[in-house]
Amino acid sequence: MFDLSDYRFDAIVFDCDGTLADNMPLHYEAWKYGLEKNGASFEVTPQMILSNAGKGIHDIVGIFNREYGDHLDAGQVALAKDEYFEMHHHAIEPIPEVMEVVNLYKGKVPMAVASGSRSKSVMRTLTHLGIAELFYPIVSVDDVKHGKPAPDMFLMAAEEMGIEPDRCLVFEDGELGIQAAEACGMPWIRVESRL
Image (cartoon, rainbow, N blue to C red; front, side):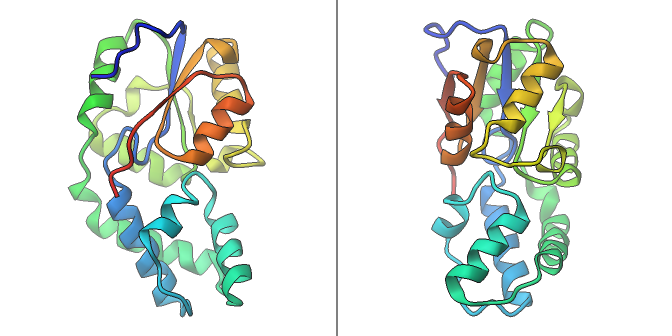
């Protein structure tokens, strides 16, 4: 269990992948499948995926295209990645320490989700875990102009909850998400990545 005694907050904002859901290994395999199926010229490593956690798929594919001189179509990579993810989605489990926090604070403080994944993927994961109804709003990369490390997702979540950003505690596993939380003055707790 996380020790929250040093934090003063009126709401909690959770990242989804790797924070609420223990699905980063599945995301890595799905990325690998999507990129390889579309002819990526490079070997996909876990570090490549972790270092870009929180960014949108179009941004990530653009980075890989520039770095490796490829011409991968982000839409096609996304389709293949989603196909793989859907086939193996049933195996996703929650992260127990984070779920302890969710269960402790549900009904006591507003709780939101701010995820760099696409809305369909986030809702599928939260629904599979049986926790979607515990969060409002559920903000995804589809809802903002700039993904993490920009603060847009966290600011939107705070605004929709009616809570000042500095009173929202963030749970996040990705470095880019932590940068986004810091950019809008939100205290944060790192959830260790399991990849």
